[in-house]
Length: 398
Image (cartoon, rainbow, N blue to C red; front, side):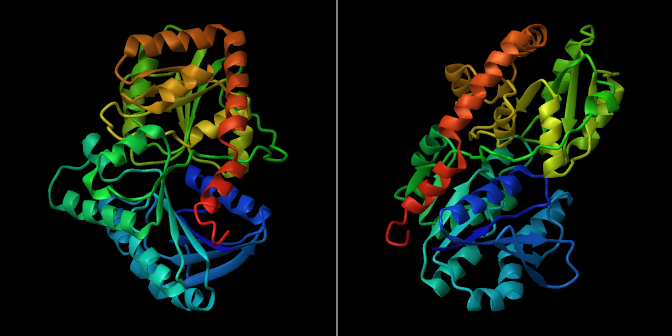
């Protein structure tokens, strides 16, 4: 089967979605399918490029800046995404038909392109839904209900209508969509996040020494630093632990909230927190292997649920997780059931602090929880399962 995967960022981007899609594409390839990845690229000087990477075909389309842009510029450039892809990739699409379209959200703006391509190729589409926008933005106070919200809502529903199957990432998300009048009757599928179980040789890094973290217990966060992550929550935790000299917090990534967090660190005199720029995927894997506890934080006001992709890297390296999540999030019960980490609701500062101290003071607890996380990864989040699950939705084409 010929499969087109659409995603709003691809390697060498350090976003978790780039890594997820790359692993999925390689697994489709291993299972005997031909795979094309389509992704925007604001660094191109030509309208589009087609390259072969790891036996995959990668179509990059020149677009305006999306990642790292201001909210309004990002919104404008994303709103034009389907139009730009069709205009600059039309010749490729017309000469390279596919049997299945897999598109990844975020972004919500591939719906128009997917609808066009389905008509052109007479093929189905599977939506991997990992970000319920604009609802999370309303919940987090980033967006108010008004004209912009109404517009995004229409685009969101158009995206759902473009899909033959919608793969949500948790049972709680399934319940959310079943209660939503606009998605009643749509085919829903719980598709967990995934990762490869063999990353190959991981580069040796020495960030502990470079960043003055030797002999410290390092609580590490890697990935997007945005509003939904509420890393101010972790800074409040850090402030409450100033008197604990062995504990350090390390954020590595990029996003809209970096400047605000850096200002807060200076204002509150938080010498136990560092924020470092994003690194490449291979370097990131080496970095992960160095540190002690993986951090997950989600804004307490979020009503939609997700299992952040960064947890896969933590589990791969047998790193225990410290999670502070929104009410009703499946991650809390998942970590508790499998004893792969300690989780609490965002806002329960006392429990979060207690969990932090438990992990910092008990290396055997960290080892045991980390080993359980690796077992959970192997049983539930292997990429082989995700690829087969998607293809099985379309047996007449598989």
